[in-house]
Length: 346
Image 1 (cartoon, rainbow, N blue to C red):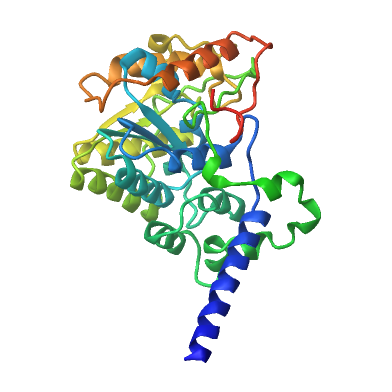
Image 2: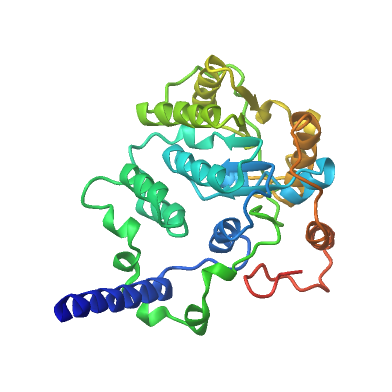
């Protein structure tokens, strides 16, 4: 009996040490435009059953859908839960986790990932979408599909990847508590720089291209998941100045969507209606800046979100965040601009 107690005590202590070191050493993106650690944990720290709409996908989603603007226009509560180059199999499990926590009325999927046809993402991308995903069955399944056998352990237990970060540690690493993370922008990345040299290729005659079998499978599985949970799904391509090749893949995504009774909208065809200006509204070739995202989110809210049921009225916190967003959007430099996890409950 004593041996069993010692064994259990040893395992508990070892687990505590391991999890503490894992939290200490993991890479953290807490501030600035690309504060994905804050944005992802901010979603998973949200109260349950408060969001009407979930926006998901790759960086094209988090640079395009602004939940503050959408809430202002519609009264809907939403969150953009996306990561850089997030593949569709990862998005499936993000949606699954989001449904379990929020039971939204609508899921909106940006389909840029359909144009990424490798069997697996590169290592940096894989860690970006797995690092802050909560441990559980959804993460176990996501990791299984995200790397070949022999490369999955580090995606599940981050210590193996980040154990060499000792020399980089700062006071912030020691005070880091993911349970306190909060993003006032509800997951949206507000990019305030402009690339005025952006051009828009003519892609209307692009030939439809099949994506990888894996992508086609997971796009269909996302649809099946939403149908099984009685949640509406809209698949879109946000404004991105798509190349001819990308348009070929998006055409195939549209075929799959329409074949399964799902709405598909390619907003690369609707710049005039949205009011987008190539010289002022893009951060780079493929991503909207804050001006473009504001225009796009207002247009999307007015044209695609009618009839979505609300869980309740937006609270005072939402309007406080909205006021802050408007001050930042207008270029007011006399405000505290730190999208961190301790200081932005304002």
